[in-house]
Amino acid sequence: MVNVFRYCLFDLLRSRWSVVYTVFYLICASALLHFSNSPSNAVASLMNIVLFITPLVSMLLGIIYFYQNREFAELMLSQPIKRVHFFLGNYLGLNASMILSLLIGLGVPALVFGWNYIGQLGILLTSGILLSLIFSALALWISLQNENRIKGFGMAILTWLFFAIIYDGLFLILLLWFSDYPLENAALIATLFNPIDLGRVLILLQLDLSALLGFTGASFKHFLGSSVGIVVALMTAVLWVIVPLGILLRKGNRKDF
Image (tube, rainbow, N blue to C red; front, side, top):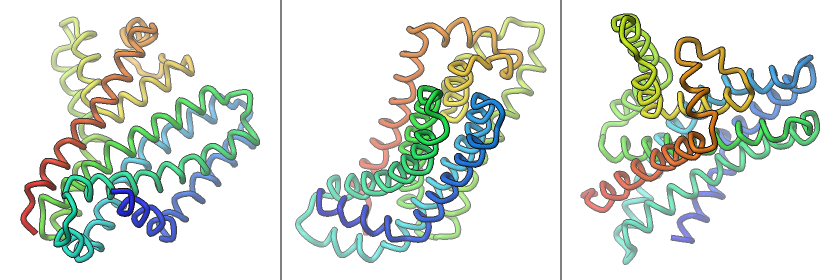
């Protein structure tokens, strides 16, 4: 597993995707932290970029890397190597390269321009890392499910659209339909089922911008603003990492190449 992890990590670090991904965050974070009058607003702007771009890049990079290296996977799996070790090495190598890009792209500008807000930027970075772990597992699982590359890309894009846009739209429609009923608890539970919304809520509460959450802001502030609520939210995020990874390893162990 260590050799597979090392191969994937150095292979991805040499790719254009990783370089562009790192430079993109480096430029955005430096510009926003340097030119914004309020570093807190700059962090809020970075939040919107991280919550949309990180899941999208994780999905696309995971799909592209697996399909490009399918022949390598078939060759490796013909050797006496455990399938779980191979797929876990791929997953960790993919995420190590993405996490390194996030650390450089967001961490360096934070140390230079936003030292006083390093705590808030740390939460933003943590959310980005968790989203990378979640959506790369989903991407590798989708690529294992679909032999056809076009179908795999389509499902990856649709998955990202669902969690980034469609889920919130359906959520708002339900709030309008049942506006006469108390929906605070239902809204809170629904948020836990979307990792992007979960990251957004945690960051906004730490920035004390929960008013931007609108109708459900008060309930989130009441529950997730407490230490117990934050622990519950972080445990839910960890479950969001463990469950897709477990499904990926189970599918990889049974896949007939």
